[in-house]
Amino acid sequence: MTTIDLGLPQLGGLDGVPTTDDKQTAKDFTSDQEVRWCPGCGDYAVLAAVRQFLPTLGIKRENTVFVSGIGCSSRFPYYLNTYGMHSIHGRAPTIATGLAVTRQDLSVWVVTGDGDALSIGGNHLIHALRRNVNLKILLFNNRIYGLTKGQYSPTSEEGKITKSTPFGSVDHPFNPISLALGAEASFVGRALDSDRKGLTEVLGAAAAHRGSALVEIFQDCPIFNDGSFDVLRKGDDAAKRVISVRHGEPIRFGPVTDDGVGSYAVVREGFGLRVAKTDEIDESEIVVHDSADLNLAFALSRLSDQDLTHTVTGIFRNVGRTTYDDAVRAQVNHERETRQADLQALLNGRDTWTVAG
Image (cartoon, rainbow, N blue to C red; front, top):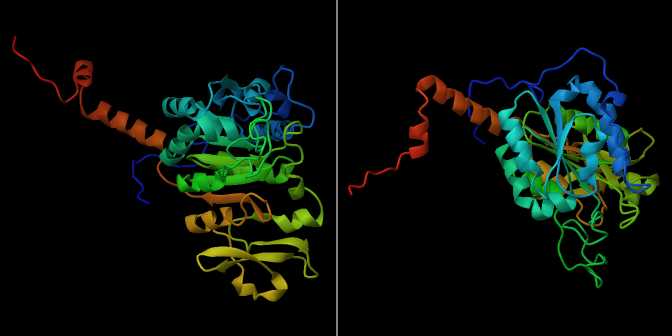
């Protein structure tokens, strides 16, 4: 991929955002609004993790903004003591793009759900990712429409029986990670709502990244899709399913063997990947994760589809390239420096004619 050299600093996701030496706590980022989600909703766990995480960035609350669309997850800005906007259905990435371009002093976050982001907001999401706008996008995926009371969503499994698919869904669902990688997002990660450590690690890396960062969060809806991710949460069965990847480390997982490592590993098979038992392969066959390898990231996203048999968490991709907002600002600054501003010339454009009467 070609990177444009704009002569601008590329020091990480926080570049240009003022920081503070004042000690901040989760309480500082907690608003006075009563949290109104259903008991047991996975959104509570994500909110708690974000409140604990934000103070570690050292960014003032007034330089932090959360933009949401429509859905249960989109109530998020109410519960944070930062700037925020509860916008319209699917359009949060668009509004956030305007903020990121015009206000370099802001750390801009988008909170959205699988319906909001991937249905009416699908085009807005993929274009924000391909442009590499300096946004951090948290996509809460519970595989159902919760706010509108239990219809199937773009990530619901085939055969899913809901109020709007009483005989089972015939739609093939989106894979949000594959979609983001296909749009060439420069950062793509995934975490479980109940995995505080893993979620915080991915959030931290996303915040430090300069460019579009999408984090898919598997999140439980106890009312309309209860237990949808239980197979990934506890016991040996979960250990056999969840594959946590870290850059530069061999991809091993599963119940720990006598030598203290996972009993399963990811190996290459043709142009794809497969899971093998470690006692049936040579150590040299185990894939070492490289978050700069787009082909590997995509193959990892396809290890498991709807059944969650092998579900990868962690950071799939993390690469640097020119951001949309830096490119726009550089263009504007260049025009200011090289020629006198002429509003009428800008309005007329290049294709104007004088027509004799």
